[in-house]
Amino acid sequence: MGIVEEAHNLRMIGKGSKTVVLAHGFGTDQSVWKHLVPHLVEDYRVVLYDNLGAGTTNPEYYDFERYSSVQGFAYDLIAIFEELQLQDCIFVGHSLSSMVGLLTSISHPHLFSKLILVSASPRFLNDDDYYGGFHQEDLSQLFEGMQSNYKAWCAGFAPMVVGGDLDSVAVQEFGRTLFNMRPDIALSLAQTIFQFDMRHILGLVTVPCHIIQSSRDLAVPLVVSEYLQQHIGAKSIVEITPTEGHLPQLSSPDILVPVLLRHIRDDIADAK
Image 1: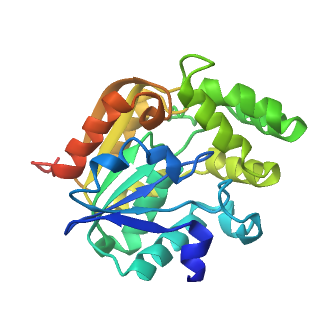
Image 2: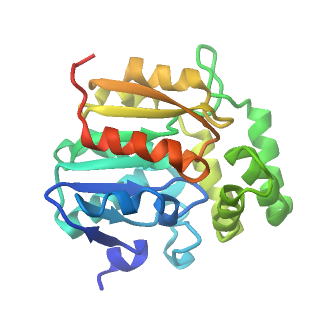
């Protein structure tokens, strides 16, 4: 087993001529796609992997300096494509990984046939002419909570981000994968994500983008999906789903999975 395969718990399953790469976001691991994968394996090769920092990965591999920017995750994604000798893939990225996919596609567009971006945001912090959903004091409180009592913070953050019932299976599942992260790694990664600003790269993207957004997402306001479509250089399409929360693939798979399957199968008919 190679170092890339081992470090990322890399798996390729299914059959088909086209490859779908599934990439998870903060606080989760590849298990977040468990409702989607069974619908893909008969028609596609499916690549699953864990971002370093996930609770399922070896914390010794986590390089705090490397992952202080999204570029570190982009380097990892390129290494995964090289390991499996992939190109022209359908990339489905959630949250952080949607931005990793966008960034990687700028330097390596041949790796992707399309990017499907779920709950994506180029910046979480509000700015003078931009509404990302968070003030700096919100983030300061979030980071302080993580530092003071990580377990208690997880218990509060999970239902807030997932939405819905405190005792729901989705909240319990996200709480589990979140708590599995080493607290200092989780804090470092949260600081990277919530403080990045990737608006300047959007115009450089040339790969078609399918933007999928929950109608109610505490982490990503609806206007962010509109901002993405207006500023991404490639042709793009937005679909707002009647789902609540930042992880609809966990909380509302009955709604989101058919939407994802349609966007995986169908290309954008007309350029924007």
